[in-house]
Image 1 (cartoon, helix red, strand yellow):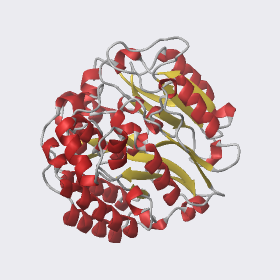
Image 2 (cartoon, one colour):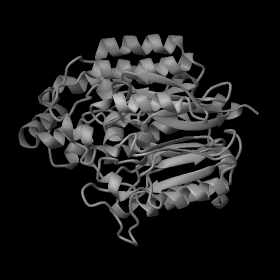
Image 3 (tube, helix red, strand yellow):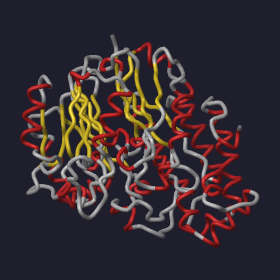
Length: 441
């Protein structure tokens, strides 16, 4: 049976801007109020998708959400027609307009946690939408994320899409960015490693930045996804690295099949975790990067670990990296040395993703991994799967609707709302999604 991992990448939206909304994400804070280029952001994302599809990796697209989110602004007390709501928010609370206009849904590693059918008790692929309740600009994404996932994974005999957990702090859930799967072939049962930042019962947490993922949330997601209890493991992220800007586990670790590529400071009691993984994962290969070669600060600055680790047809692995890694001499020296070591990682591929990176999201942030059998892949909405025709169509769509310059002040322009709605209405036709957005109802 041919089983493969399919990467579904988020498409940056028309309101992609730098507002510094994500406390704990150092790149987001550092680039606050800089001028963004939404058109370039979308094209950089599309180029990555197409290049990987051309290299033989199955690739899908997840569309952006409607922004600004007028419904949220109304719930915050801004009334009148849609244009009046925007004008009042811009005048009275521009930071709220910015949050309601965030294009952060592009980072679909936070969209949901996915458990493939080989790991679930009912033999379906399960998705639990993340509540993202640590940040206002992300906590509003869940309903549309659920609608989009249902429009892409429609067959309820093969797929189960669960709503987000309740919006309370003890159930903070950030999706697949804190989830790893380890094992042999994709079609074989794997070990699902859930990584949490804090355990409410112990109160062990970082001091500077928030720990966004809780143990209680990870346990609830595992139950909802019907993960076989024999294939579960929970571990805590090192609070010290969260305080250095590692706001999600995928900023300090990435896994693929039997390989875990991580920094030596990634986890609490890391030697014990590696021993447990060696016991439970056949052929487990840890690739731990020592601080002497790459510091945590360098890992955060370059997003070395926010990379994609992909299996090539010959069984070797490709590491997909942002250009920032190549531009850092120490990190690039380490990576070239890595290729000479005895591990499955044998090649590197670098992408220019600077628009996403400036807001704190690298290659791994932009994709949601879904392991699918041949039958399950046939049940996916085929219109979202990347090919030559879709690439050309989406590039033309971006050229037509996206601005090449955007500042926080530009969010007050009511025309931006109308441009976005027209663009998304057309996109739902291209991707054959139906009426998934509120304005289409």
